[in-house]
Image (cartoon, rainbow, N blue to C red; front, side):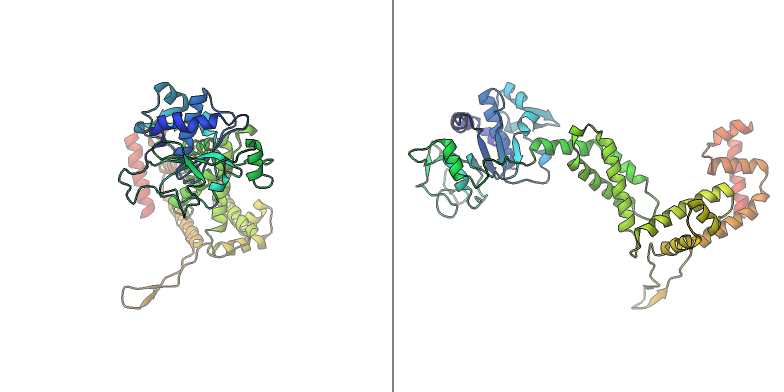
Length: 432
């Protein structure tokens, strides 16, 4: 990690900030090329020098890393700041210093579309083509990294050919050779020069881009609702998909919801995120998990028919017929049969797989899960009469009503240990 520009607090206060404060009525504009923390550092210095955040300050950052919302400063980076200033513009979180909203709202995530008053450039970061032309005449170029005393190859030789800056256009205004002023013409106001240098329509169009404060808010929303996303993913567990994949889908949906969320609408983010996450999970099952592409209405009918069969099996006590399922859903029997046929295409099973011996294959038997369920029900129906009344009450309470052995013991007037023995004996009877 490169040293923070806040370590050069005296350079900022004595040489960088004063020209920006003299801009006048027009808001100063800063462009940090190389590290977003440089944009924050200059905003903090401006806020401290002016006593409050400069009105409508725009501090642009050239590079936007994916974890920008975690942008922070180490304790060693902020030691040069007076304690009062440090706590005024930054707040401490987990041994790091995070920009407060008053500063983060001034940092724009993107390149400026109009002339700027200051460009902060780090060594090793190539100057964007034409960037120096977007620095207004009289504006300043700050070299964030100080030159090496030995002038070695890592020293930033930024003035010269290859970077779009020539000594004829830039004048050093600071002893260490880190701050340069672009030579300005002999006449013309700043407003006229900005209008001349700006591309057509730039003066009328306000910069519309996300701020660092927006990104930090998104990050907080995501971190605060990770458990909600995980819980929603678990609702769809045991449906043939790994829980890790479902959680990944849920987390991505949470991130998208945070980016789209508009707090000004007055809605709770948890409700908004829940709707988005559930929608993404359902789309995942609809579009990504079927081995063959099935029309959406048929997929939905297949899922509805499966739920109807489970419901009717518990209500009627027997496996429902196709006619009963169709009547329950209010559709035709042919539609139910078609949905059942489509359900066989949910997951493809290879008829041959490679064996352990060289190049030989073996056949894989194709089983019908629904047929196995029917056979299990028939075997259970024949075995249940062998149980006495107490054993049937215990099995029904444990496996259908979700009751504990202690609750059943209190109802039957026996000990919990006795219920455990009766439960084990009933299961042994069914197995035999």
